[in-house]
Structure formats: structure tokens, C-alpha cells
Length: 249
Ligand code: AMP
Image (cartoon, rainbow, N blue to C red):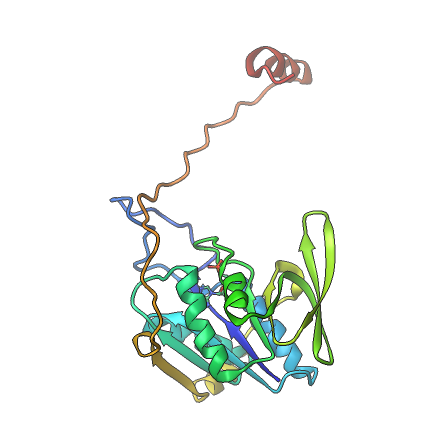
């Protein structure tokens, strides 16, 4: 069984994101970029499926400009067997990404498609769900545990009330939540080896998919600055202020 894992290039989670002066977007020039953290977890899950003998091949796929090859090389250094970049210009919407990923699933016919539950830049939380609809397959989102049993995969999902276990018939789409695993670091020898692993580049315009935008960003603005707090000298003073100034008790 092949496992396809979708990897998105995003601003590194440790970077303090700044809004552009014209409020059209966030500043991306000279900013450190990385694999979306939830996609790293998805890559780790795919590698564990291969190491346990349940998957035969792990294929990392990214949609975006040429520079996304950096993140695909990281996935290869972690242990993926090969990678596919679907080359596009601008940032695409989740539906367009899902349609492009769908073309790869049609070609590769993976048993499991793993994605992150969400990208930390757009916070969309849509691509996996849309992809599963296009594939007509089962979906297990927010996965914190995955267990393949024959033609089925049991997924423990993190839901509001606790944990939900679902059995999905393969092929299935699974999106990774934070507690699924701790992604491995790529070792230096593996980073070197990854440079020789196959990375195929496909131009999105050759796939005959409608990726025209359906949304328009009107404005991007920074959250309001938090006002400084005050220090009180006693519990009595705190209670007095909460009662008479804040009016919350
Ligand atoms: P989103 O729906 O944007 O929150 O993204 C959820 C997941 O979809 C990500 O964690 C990725 O696994 C996948 N995904 C989103 N955008 C891309 C992209 N440009 N290339 C590859 N995978 C993507």
C-alpha cells in the first residue's frame, strides 16, 4: 500500500509574523519557511506505517512554487521515498489544492492519504475534508492514533467531548492532530541522501484543473495590542477593583 502525504510550506512556527504596510498580506520576504508542523506529524505517521510493514512506499507531495522543493527535501530526509511538486504560482485556496492533490491520488492510487489537520498560516482546516469528498473516500480528521487492520484503518479522533474511534475503509484520508506522534529530526547523512531521492515536478497548468480563485482577501491586519496590566498590593484591592472598576464580580 502506498501512502501519500501532503506537505505545505509555511512561515516557520517560531517566526513573529508581521503584516505588510499596505495590509494586503503578511510579510513573506526574508522570512524563515518550514514544513507546516501538522504536515510534519503526517510525514512521521506515514513513515511509521512503512516501518511497521503496513505501507510499501511513502510519497510526499506539495503544491506551490519551486521553493517548496526545500520542504519536500526535508520530508525525503525524514524518510519519504520520493516526492512530487505540483508547481503553481500564487497561494491557492484549499479547494484548488484539494483538486490538484486529487489528480495525484488518481495516478498513484494510495491506500492512505495523510495531511495535516490544518495549515498554521491560513488556519483553513479544509483541504483534507475536500480531498476526501473528491475521492469519494472515508475521512478521519484530527487523528491522534492510526491502526491499519486489513482493508480498514481505525482512527482515534480528538473531538470536543474526548476521543472518538472510527473504522474507515481504505482508501481513506486522514488528517493529523498534534498528539499523533513526535516527528523525527532528519539526520545529516539522511539530509545528504535525500538530495538524490526522486523529486518530480509537474506544472499545475498541465493537469487541466480549474484552480481559479473564489475568494478575495480584502484586508489583513494585526491583532490589537494588549493594554499593559496593573499590579495590585493585596487581595482586598484586587477584589475591590474587580467589583467597582471592572464590574465583573
Ligand atoms: P488547510 O486546509 O489549508 O488548513 O491545510 C490542511 C492540510 O492540507 C495541510 O496540513 C497539508 O497537509 C495540506 N495542504 C494544504 N495546502 C497544501 C499545499 N499547498 N501543498 C500540499 N499540501 C497542502
